[in-house]
Length: 309
Image 1 (cartoon, one colour):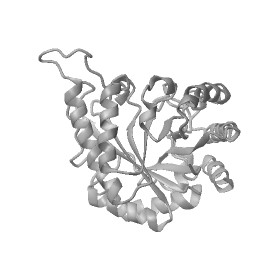
Image 2 (cartoon, one colour):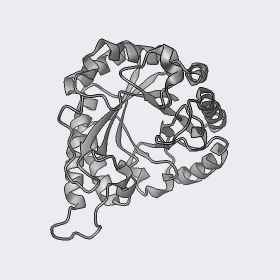
Image 3 (cartoon, helix red, strand yellow):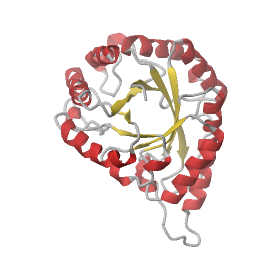
Image 4 (cartoon, one colour):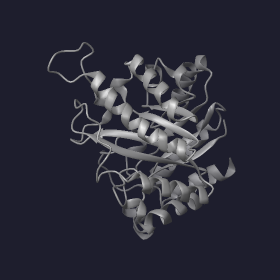
């Protein structure tokens, strides 16, 4: 598998956002400023709570199919390869890793079968678009930690996706959870979220290497990144961590991550988190504490690393 020099684009984009000229300009800047060769379109469906069984992917909270397809066409015009990543979060603010139900069905309680039925419908909808637009890869889920023990359901979902889409399929497990997935043999590529602390990358890479070796599959970090605030490099997955703006700490995280992973030939790239469809003014980059790298020192670190690959 070729090395993936990717960025996640458009997370949280709502209906109409991809139609804005600012969104296309943002994607163009992503390509130019980071030397990316892949764009991951991450879609944000919702469900009412972590215990709801209805995945809602039609509505104002999502870009339309037409918007997505036109943005994919624009990405192609920029010579970008494409992944589609349909993701879901409870609308009450609970992280999707906590979506969970009883393992033994109980009358009048929500059930795994109902949730997987709705989630599969969601995945198939976008798998058909991925097939139509010939996306290079499809990501069937992201950080769905409590669901991962439902091996039978995940295998069935992936097999149904294959009937709609014949490209590469991966599942993006969460940090530290690489050994939690017993069905890696069902996907083409193994991926996880690389939010590992500054200075701990060698330890984590040693651990991951042992886990994935028996499957003999390509591996990449479908997510990785760090907010630009003091303290975030030590806990890069905590988007709510309070701290002062610190763009240099963000850059240090990226330098460490790239240095350590570049020594492991089995790490086949990144889908960095994240590049917004609508950017803040570049002059205000030093006021932003989020994962964005636009106009920050980390942007140059990424560009230089990707450009050299």
